[in-house]
Amino acid sequence: MGGKEPSVVLLDENGIRCDGRKVDETRKVTIKAGVLKNANGSAYIEFGDNKIVVGVFGPRDVHPKHLANTDTGIIRCRYHMSPFSVTERKSPAPSRREIEIGKVIKEALQPALILDKFPRTSVDVFIEVLQADGGSRCAALAAASVALADAGIPMRDMVSACAAGKVADTIILDVNNEEDQSGQADMPVGYMPNLEKITLIQLDGVLTPEEYKKCVETAIVGCKKVYEIQKQAIHDKYFANNGD
Ligand code: ADP
Image (cartoon, rainbow, N blue to C red):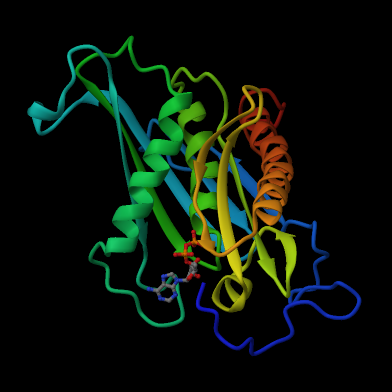
């Protein structure tokens, strides 16, 4: 949330956003499950111009061993942006931002996972952002959830994700990079649609209590749309007669 002077009109007089969307419209989302042969589970997501691939390994032995928990399996999560994922070359070394996002995605997935049957093991989630365009943590979280399901990890629910935010004093669904940089607020939300529980909520920017409530409700509408696409991705891999 840079609060920068917008270089484009974020919301025109007809209520149309800088990328042509209406205020309550998400970008186009496509998800494919099972895209990596060497991972136990995987998924590829395109969320607008975000392009992200996720590989899941495990449950497997934990290294270093002292991290192992004798009562339950653990989940570890790495979020990494490739050097070519943004306009300026990004250093391949993990930044503070990437470490933070890995942590919040791990914590957003944890409530959905049933790992007590796998003591002393770890489920490792590797997220590679090939192209970022705002909302990459939500896109990564949605893809990671599909990859975990693809790996056959027992889950209480899918974790879906979508951001809402505020531009030109208006609450909008699914904040793109331009809106994130120049808008007034960005609120990524992770949500378990069947359990109706939020597992991730962050807020960059300032909202009134009423705007906050509307932003959460708007993001949940987006999460429910993304959930349908997540389900379809699993269905397409395991149930559709696609000749594979
Ligand atoms: P999110 O991608 O979850 O919205 P941020 O709000 O931190 O996370 O980032 C918003 C957007 O800013 C990213 O999606 C990406 O397009 C851009 N961005 C992030 N890091 C960099 C970077 N190092 N260089 C250029 N752009 C970046």
